[in-house]
Image (cartoon, rainbow, N blue to C red; front, side, top):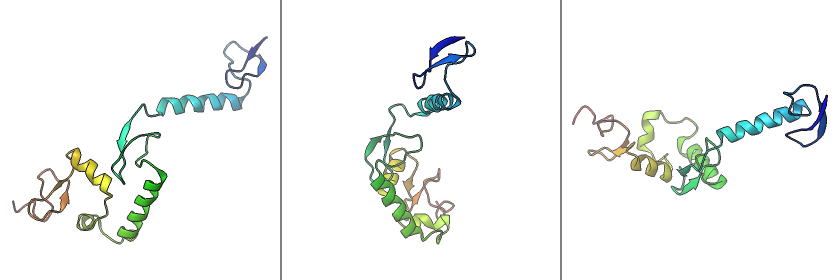
Length: 136
């Protein structure tokens, strides 16, 4: 048996096989978690905050807002405006439930346009809202 240093904590231990790298299961799990975090960590991804429209560097793969304050403001806006499911999905274009930054992002990337007949925001391929899609 050979005395080696744990690759995670640096503690010396007697390894039982040549494949053993860690002194304990805990260190092995921590090393695996660290490896996974690095693997799935965004690499310098610049995003647009869905609340305020500012550019920010994404720290987590699912991060949508530049700060905790923007995330809380967006959540508060959704709760106030939507009334916790008070509206049907087709009614959302009739009320201002979308944060300013989200709409800016959607428009800049060609994902949303305004209906030329009524001005309602739409994501349909025709560029017309559902009311006017068949009438153009």
